[in-house]
Image (tube, rainbow over all chains, first blue to last red; front, side, top):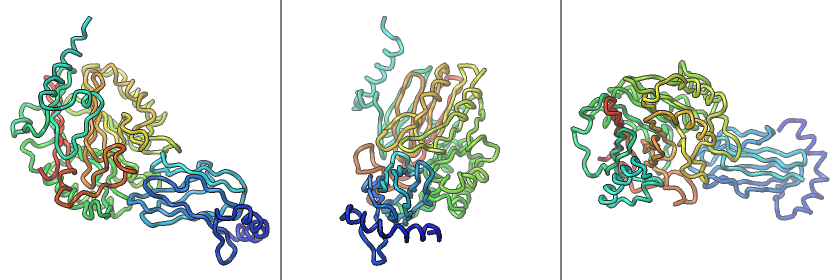
Length: 116
Length: 325
């Protein structure tokens, strides 16, 4: 995470907590009040396919397939390296919006992160 | 007016029926996991018989030349479906070297490596050096372009090719075209050739006699095997339109780690087994991931593909052989 993102994340903390109350149950709250969410890559699919999170949430993708996958934003917002079995990739969403993404190796695999 | 050619095909299919092969199944597509198939094309009419019926030493005789297709070596893969993919590739090479008729060359239809790592490319290179046939033609699979946009693949296996690795060559009167359908894939789509490559292909075929036998090879099938798993190429129709006027077209693919074939007019489509691990038949598993079979069965679901060409008779025979045969 860049220093700039850190600052944005810090400023957004109060908003985030309020938002978290609204989205109770979707993302979990870590000890440092940082919202996190996980997407599991299993059987050539992203699960859950749509994840809705508050601004400032760090989403982590974890690949549990025997085949490598990627998680790449269709609009160029984020791009994972190739994740082999049990490897992870994280990205913190600092702006509201809908972020469609796909696996560049198996493009039939698609998902989206909705940031509110 | 009855279609003469259709009658001939029906007759041949009737023969197949006598062999216990379902006609509808043949027309749709065929999966012969763990067995083999002799496939010939005579004057544009496809004839087929099961490999198990006997592929003798003489079957390669009279052929003007032959070549072997191998695919999906996935060097670097080490999961339970096959913990030693280098050993099974070596077995494939040994099998090719032991063939009674020596192939003129080998075609590798992609997924040389699992993760595009330099060490994986090294191992593949070293293992293939043991092949008696010194000329090996490659096309990349998606696993060979995981990093640096496939630059490493191009430098090592695609020297002198166009774009992301496509090219053509002629051998004893047959025109071969190696295509790349694993680059710049679009979200939600399947394999893709792209505008530049299609334009090049159209140009490459211009002016060639319609009697020239054509062999197209690419990693992902150039026909839609199973769209739910992305087993097809979005713009393959366009590519196939360029070969419509030719009398004999053979399409060789990999990617799906199992034998499937389909005949459409004068075009025959064929996918090869992997040398690394099998994948499930379309729709028979939650996903297309590596399929674990009992260790003693592994060599029956991995294999090589031997292609014999009789130029004078315009006939082509494809024989798939499991490693364990």
